Length: 191
Image (cartoon, rainbow, N blue to C red; front, side, top):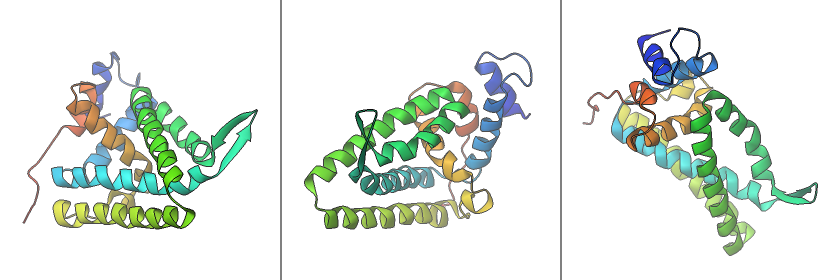
């Protein structure tokens, strides 16, 4: 366990090594992700890219609603349940914050779907995918000058939303333990 893990475990009320368990594994995974996302402009591009891609996936899946035990629920909500559970297990507070964002984005998808045709939905989905992927590619190639983290570790696809939320909660003055991990900065190689 590294220095950042020791500090973040103590910052969360854990006094001995190993008490953080899965949480320290998440901290190591997050620290690895951070190494690919040091440039502030790359981080900003990831906020937009991840939001665009999330909405792009949510739109078509929100179109289909099924009834379970008398409750109408979108396929998007069902599809998100496993990854939300994972995010809660990795870090409960970040998982809760992401759940709030997911609820807002699924609400936005529902509003959009009330105002567009099926062709409009697929057109918007395609545009959001292009914008989302372009944001991530530009972030890495122009601002970070390093290949995306998911190339080396595909699990980083699941860490991206947690990274964005961690940056937000640290910027808002919460979760100082995560600030030890995501708060480190270097000068961006912007040329």
